[in-house]
Length: 327
Ligand code: DGY
Image 1 (cartoon, rainbow, N blue to C red):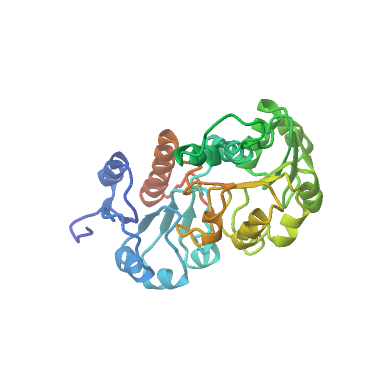
Image 2 (image 1 turned 90 degrees about the horizontal axis):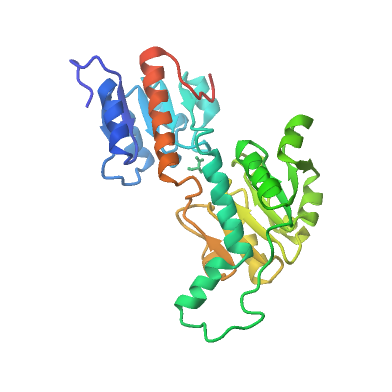
């Protein structure tokens, strides 16, 4: 709690995080902590952030103009996530509040998570597990749960930032895949060559890819970037994986496409309105679902938490953050 006697800047940690990271913060800052880990309403968040100079967010807390107006002493919001669609960055810039995220430290782990979902969906791993656990496995059969190959297939990637490039490397070098990508901006030729990826138009990617991986952040431009029209261009044997953000894929349209066999399978780690999942997706057997855990290895989550903490400490005590979004 902030007291007049305390010279330390005060910060609020909006969710339960690693005790060692709380200890690190507490050594230098005046820390209050949502230890109960309950999801805070916008009003509760404001009440907890008022009087603080910093807030440690996890990607689910919305930092918007209303909160900023109610918390005039706030100087920095440090997200323990690479994505920051929970931040209204223009409003933060206008209010003189620094936004930071947690890039790089999660790149390889998140790419692994994307591949895990691709393998699970294309090779029907989760479907097979449900089949077995339900006691339905009676005998070997030549066409039981046959899926699609990942090795040697054509992989299409939407979003060629660090994570997209890590996925491209896995596909090209590890699985012998032909890699296509589409991005707002094309990579320089040497970077394209390094990840062995070919830039193509969005519709070309959708038509040619055997598997499509979505790694886009959610912005007004990417909302429903993959919807009914895009799904209609994909091969009936194709798999769609979304590890970018919920809302980039139109989940209702995807559920319809899966149910009607217009694409073969999907692997989803992020959802529109998560932690709720569209009921029609839950009803589809040909979709592998995980609860936003693509970055969830212990070392990576620890590194993300340390980076967010270092941003708070660095900025509030020394005026320097490592990974500013709006410097
Ligand atoms: C991120 O860092 O943005 C991942 O989605 C994990 O929250």
